[in-house]
Amino acid sequence: MHLTPDQTAAFERDGYLFFPGHFSAAEVALLNAEVPALYARREAYNVREKGSDAVRTNFAAHLYSAPFARLARHPRMVRPVEDLLGERLYLHQFKINGKMAFEGDVWQWHQDYGTWQADDLMPSARAMNIAVFLDDVNEFNGPLMFIPGSHRRGVLEAGHDVTTTSYPLWTLEHALIAQLVEQAGGAGRFDAEGHYLPGGIVAPKGPAGSMLVFHSCLVHASTSNLSPWNRVSVYLSLCAVSNHIRRFKRPEYIAHRRFEPIECLPDDCLLAQSAVELPWAQGMPASALETSPDPIQ
Ligand code: SIN
Ligand code: MN
Image (cartoon, rainbow, N blue to C red; front, side, top):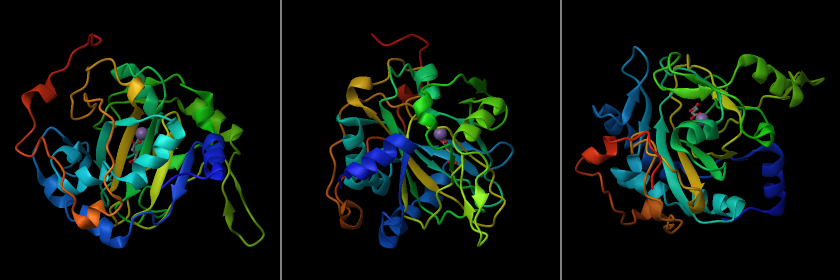
């Protein structure tokens, strides 16, 4: 799957692309069936919500779960990003975010590249996020919100938020968010029929299997999930091989340390259950928890 010139232009303008229903219900079912057992594991790679047992984010499932190992090599996810970055890619981060019914907490406004630069010494923003919805995403279960075009501002000044949620993040001041939203179209408006036309905040919604591609400098956030519906989504963070991280300050299950280019599997790999290696099938190696404040040599 490759992008059209119109899609590339839209990405450059807005910083994201949305592909509703990109994976079939049968493909999503195979992925979804794995999630409860993965979330039940008492492992460092399952980060739970503050004061709750609900999983906020599960890291690196592609190293110990076959369906997710296939998804991490899926051409429908990897090829569009290869097109956008014009280079082979390695997988910097893999996560399955829960945003579970009633329990899923907020993600404050941030840029992902802010964290990758500050913590992992990733040299530039030649990296991209892809999200695949494993549940329907509607206006009630905490859809991801974007400020369209905000990626064009580059890296914005951020502060390290280690208190709001259970997961530390470099987040942006509310005054800056208000300014960015205003510049991107403000509050939006209602047309004569009462339909809302978005302005400076958009929240792409769609059925399970939908896919979002977004720039690593695109400013985004999500509210808590007070609905009775989970909003499980898988996120791949893909980085140009030449732009690999230069520091292992965070554990390997969060920021990966193998920079070989991704070899895609066939398009039917999920349903065909293509063979994949699972290096952490017997458990995470102790080395994955070793970290260093120093740049790698
Ligand atoms: C993220 O920004 O990494 C996750 C946001 C979300 O899942 O809502
Ligand atoms: Mn993010």
